[in-house]
Image (cartoon, rainbow over all chains, first blue to last red; front, side, top):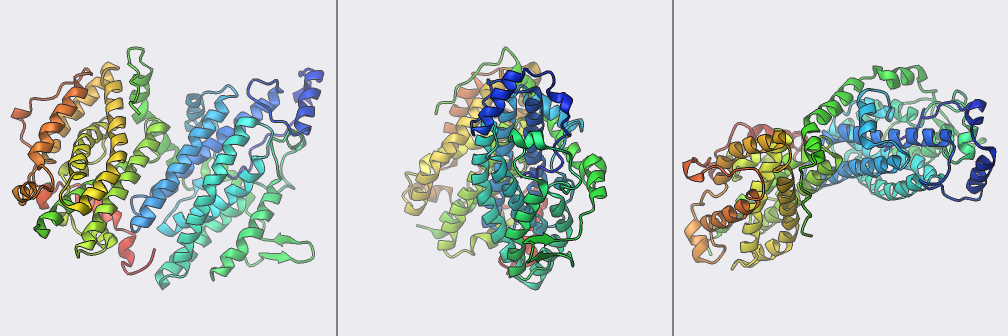
Length: 328
Length: 251
């Protein structure tokens, strides 16, 4: 699950001055022809740097994103939900594994990426700095955050870097199941007992503001990303993704008799665009820079897991360790 | 065949797997490496799926539906061994428990797949193929870590010593033990234990670990009769937290 907002640094003219113009021209021509760039191909430093950053943030978002929903695995009501919740969260961890491998092809190790996560040097999707207070919050995440992630990832799957684009194709196929699972769980809540309806509406009210910031700041305030769009690193603008998400999911939310907590939310029939209350971008910046309700807790959990598991990794690296081949 | 004896056996099988599955699932997001996180989650899904299969057989014998049985009983109504309810502890304890438990579980499943009681035989035949992978996973990791660093060996040895009395409690005979053996349902817990010892010894021999002298160890019994450690009830309370908001609701 990943929104992709606020990922890119502004590109400067200077960034490309040190690159060989002939190689750069050939690289750009390949991308323009729709070819994929593979790990051993020539690429500009800026391309490599931005891709590592993007894929790494995506991977971090998957393992940190496993935490708010993961806490509900042990409390999921009934066998059907318990099994599905486990499988769903496991998929997210599997996505992290896939994505760290994709990022490693660009020259940064998984261990280094995890260290940067724990040190707060690299980011992850900002929505996971908000808490999942109830089972209903977990359902809203499974449905709407995964829905948002699909919008973003379907676009990025058409990007130019081969390993990332192939990983995203696999990830999107699994996310499609998460979306069905999340929707089914929300439908049960929204059409269930008065208590269930109250729980799901309250969760939607809590999660709507973070959902609106999921795709990152408005294009009006975003940094210039023309080069990255030409290189097919960034595939769609933040506002385009947000509009697509609203178009696909607001009607489905209304269909369930739920209310979206934004009185200004409506589709302008003339422009075809959704209008909404501008999200609080100051809060977004504050949270992404560490001052959100759960930032410290999320990183502390990750740090503890790393520390507690360090002896296992040391043992695996021990030259004395015998590799035991599984029988099957 | 005495239906009470069959039900007792089914409860024991189902409860062990539900509780261990639940514990395994607690590793999601916290594993020492991502691959282990994913592996414990896979085993959790299998175990809980297996418990559901046995609760479904119980329902066919007139017991309540699986959700009610799993999510509304109290600790003293559970028939699992105490081994599976102990907290995960560090990865070394979880791995040792997984090794001791699954090496016994596979034997029970192998025996039950030949059972004279056909509904159990069918389920056991279907599920033992999955448990085989749990055993492979446990044995591979024990062999690997059990002969690696001093630190790893020390941790695993200490967890092995701690877990062994509880592991022996898995073989606590049921009050219908002889009846089940005579009716050809399976060969009974003593037989499972004898085969289990052979198999775990064969793995431990390939490592720097030592199996404690079992003759000097008092097994932790009682689980099969509803006596549990202080850890089971909080686990069950957590499991039922949402379900009990409204047990009649469709979640």
